[in-house]
Image (cartoon, rainbow, N blue to C red; front, side, top):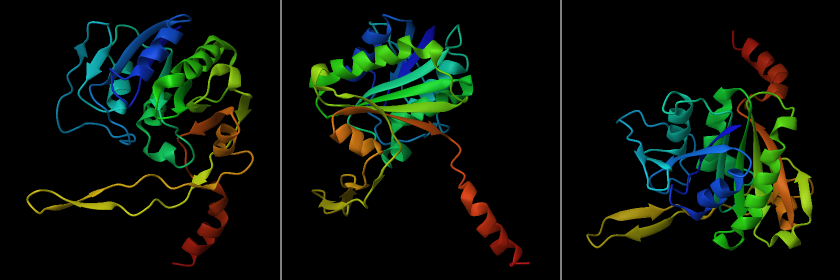
Length: 249
């Protein structure tokens, strides 16, 4: 199995090294990742300038672009062989609920949909790397069993691992996305020349974080696994919306 690995924390981030080391035990792995932290860039694709891959001393490939750029290049000709599966992470910080809209970690996995199979996004629910080994252990466990996974094409498994020692993890739960409350107001700052600017504030707290959600599972000490697909069509709205549109004629 050939695995293409990326992230949004950057090619030198400790999470991607931990992920590569773990998955290299079960597959042939190639790393293509942004040359700097691109957290929060979502599925942005660079179309206003060329991208320049650069092979580092450790064999990882650095790209002056986004996580989506990295996977796009990796599955469309940069590599001599097309990968079998895309794996993204390990992100420092959870990607729960609405986070998946903005997450470059999840976006990299979503770009892997063009391979027609299942992709993975792994996040550690901590900003500190202390328990990256825990998330790496679960990544290796899941990818070792990838061949037995029967899911619809273009599915992404969004995996969030509590920031705990492996022995303290209670298990794995299948979850749905929760929802966050509205974020706090951006913070106004003024530079030395008097020009105002704004820092985006932290994401809102869980507003829908009850039993069955990814928020709840991680808070209870469980690994959360949420299946995602790109199709965000709100199918139950068709009947109501159809009647409304008909009335416009």
